[in-house]
Length: 255
Image 1: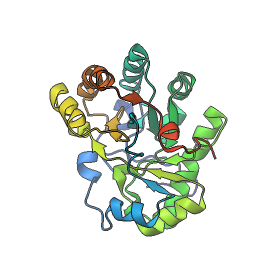
Image 2 (image 1 turned 120 degrees about the horizontal axis):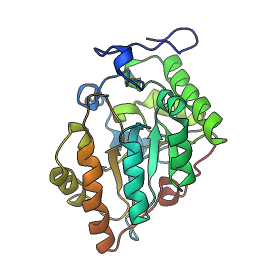
Image 3 (image 1 turned 180 degrees about the horizontal axis):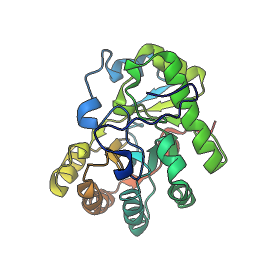
């Protein structure tokens, strides 16, 4: 798990020397993502100023979001595609990986994308103590602050796993919880066409779209990168405008 300072890394079936960046502690999305005891839609209704699943349906704005980076293989590829189409997105980054790949974090921010907190080691927070939750969020915040010069307000829980106690704690810590209403399911390592269809068939004005620019080291996310070449021009053609989460929800990126 982690020591008193929170920095002891534990490998998961992959020798450390073979993995050039930190692994998600909770495991891949396919393992860690489980049904929540409290539906996130319920939490959104109970905490409307803290938990967001989507933006307002009026207008034409949508938000692409990417989890589990920065990843030395896929994050630069995703950034290249976003630059090609001149659209902005929001990246929820693991503190451990941000500390390892500071250059990618700085590039992401310099190119106009928003950055949020995705915990330090990526555990399933609903299986941890509130003390551990506090440490995970605070440690990731410290790592990102050191790189960016500001402390991100936006927070996305690994696997989308929340409960009432965690939402209340995160609110006390000054965080805004960003979930989603469109899941690309790219974490299943699907093909380009399937990922694109998952997004295009479900996106409407105000949608928050979940995608991944990182994950377990064994994951192949090339389908995500390629699907962006389908998703972005199609939605632009339909009159959609890609914005960051702070723009979509009118919330501050920094605390």
